[in-house]
Each structure stands twice: as C-alpha cells, then as structure tokens.
Image (cartoon, rainbow, N blue to C red):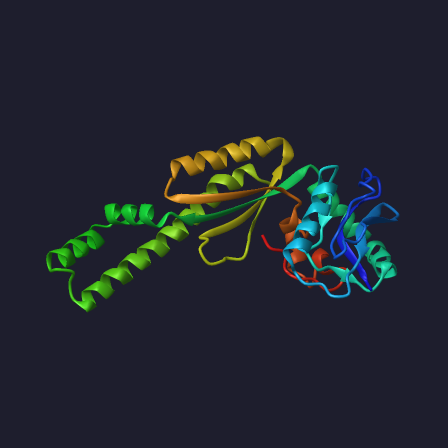
Amino acid sequence: MGTYVYGIIRSSHPPLRQDLEGIGDPPRPVRVMGRGELAAIVSDAPGELRPKRRDLLAHQRVLDEAAAEGVVLPMRFGSVSADDDIVAAVLAEQAEHFLERLQALDGSAEYNIKANHDEEAVLRLIMADREDIRSMADANREAGGGTQEQKMQLGEMIAAAVQEREAADAELLHQTLAPLATQVSAGAQSTGWLANLSFLVDRHSAEQFLTAADEFQRQYPHLDLRVNGPLPPYSFVDSPASEQGEGGTAEAFGTTTAQPN
C-alpha cells in the first residue's frame, strides 16, 4: 500500500486534529510518526495516485493545518515511501538536515506572486515610449494598412518590445519585493506569466510585504499580480547549497510529482 508523506515537523509540534483527513477516496486518516526530535505527517497511500484536484487540495489542507500551529517542511504532492519503516529510517538518516531546515524556516511563510501584462495597457505604453513603432504604425495607417511585409515588420517590432517589457517588469518586481523577504525563488515559467516568484517572508513582516505588493500593483497598473499566501514554504525546503547536490528533501521519501505553484 505504501506510506504517503505530507511533511516533516518537530516532535514537539502541537498535535494535529484527530479527525484530519488526507488524500484518497475515501480520504485516508492522517497520523503523525514521531522519531526522536522529528515527526512525519503521513497517511496510508492509495493504490493509484494521480494529481487530481481533490487530492491536491487535501494535501494542501493537511499542510495548512500543520503550518498554522508551527513550522513544517512540506513534501511535494506524490511523496510516497514503501512503508512506515522507510519513513522512520529517512527521518533518522537525515535528522541533522531536517532540523537545520526547520530552524531556518521557523516563523516564516511563502508568498507566491505571479504577474502578467494587461495587453491593451502595455501596448499603449509601448506606443507611447517607442517613436519608431509609433511612426511605422502611423505610416501603415496612412497607406491604408501597409503591405503584408510592412505589417509583419510592425508586428515583429511590437512583439520584441513586449518581450523586453516583460523582462524589465519581472526584474522590477523582483527588485522591489526581494528586500522584504529573506529568500526568493523563481518558479517555472508558464504560458501567460511574465514572472513567477516565491518569497520567504518573516510572519511578523507579512503585512509590510503585502502592502508593498499592493502598492506595486497601484504604481504599475499595466501589470496584473496574483498573490497567493501564506503558504507552507514549498520553494524553500532545501537550502541553496543542498539544491545544488543530488536529490533533496522533497525527494527523500521516494516517488514525487511536481507541486503546482
């Protein structure tokens, strides 16, 4: 059957609700396996595990419950070990690393910010800023739309200008909010997002961070920001040094699939 691992906590972590349910259909009861100073939040693993919305939400819900009461090292969705004994062995073998990461992340939360452009607004900015593009657009319009070659040339110039603006705005977002975080992690780029950044923020500074994000949105209305958090620190489970080596905390317990961000 296997053992599904949601996350790692200290053994001294406040108890989770006894009726907390995890992944699976029907949902598997969540339990805590303590080994020395560490404990793993686990449940029995379903025979077949796929990233269905129901199970993704259940995984997140368990971690949110744990994170509300103290620091937790979240495992990515799909972390499955052969049995409880394997989980216990990993806790023992990597105890020093896990305790170091729990200490480093204590009192912090992750905020993920995705950004993209309001297409009409950014095109207006480009037309206002780029005299060459504006002149060519005016010339084409006066010529009844211009030739096919001229239209293609204008389109290529606009596309290049949009890409330049995307890169500049992504860097501006990073530079503005990074000083308010202890770490920043760039997530995988996805279609439609010009930036996908995760910030590790001290919980005492969270209000200041969110205020800065709101102010950034007001200052740059051609950008659309999506702020998600507070989250368990998915993007910061491993230190930068350990990320350069093989594997990591997220892969410690066996099979994993990507955690959507």
